[in-house]
Structures are given as structure tokens and as C-alpha cells.
Length: 136
Image (cartoon, rainbow, N blue to C red; front, side):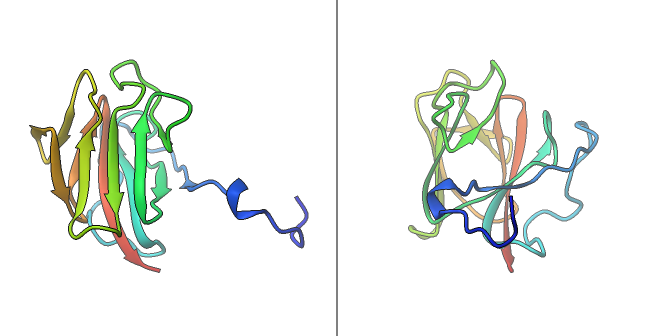
């Protein structure tokens, strides 16, 4: 695409980057605050596609294996509509299981819903995700 052309906002995708790393090693050495990210983001820290990062818009982000989900996690252990993550609207940020088969784990504990903050680990299926924050 020519650098002078404008991509309409509705066609922009929130996926920022994918840097392949060892799926058994953490992608971030110090989770929580990350340079170069404005606001909140979700990073695959360990598991399939480690290093993949999504910038989170304020409001509800749906997570699951269904193609209509905001964050698509391609694994049979992930339900089609697995979880809903709300950031920047409520205080504190919040995650809720959306009736999944295998549940969500927050910092190692299986919960139906919980407040989440930068540095918290969210496990969905085989994906170990970190909620991170940056100031741009």
C-alpha cells in the first residue's frame, strides 16, 4: 500500500506485532509496563505464537476461537467465545469467563471473573497472556 493512502479506522486491526520466540520461555522479562505501547495491550508470553501483541481499545474485547472474536486464539482448548476483557472503562480493568469449557486462570487461579492490572497473567487454553501497559 502506498504510504500516502489513508486506511479507514474500521479497517485497521489491533494486532501490533509478532516476534517468534521460544514458546516455553517468557516473551517479556519484566511484565507490566512496556515501552512503545500506549494504553493497555495483551501479549502472548508463553505458548503458541509467543510474542504476539494486541493493543486493547477502551471497552470490551472478546477473546476466543471463533472468527468473529476481537482476539482470535487458534487452539481446541479455547472456546469459540471464551472470555471478555474490559479495559479503560471500569476501574479496575476486568475479565470475565464467557461460559467457556476450560475456564480462565488469573495469576494461576481459576476464576469466573476478576479485576486485572498490568503484570497479571491470564491463561486461556494453552495461551499464557500478560496484560501490559505503556505510556507511548
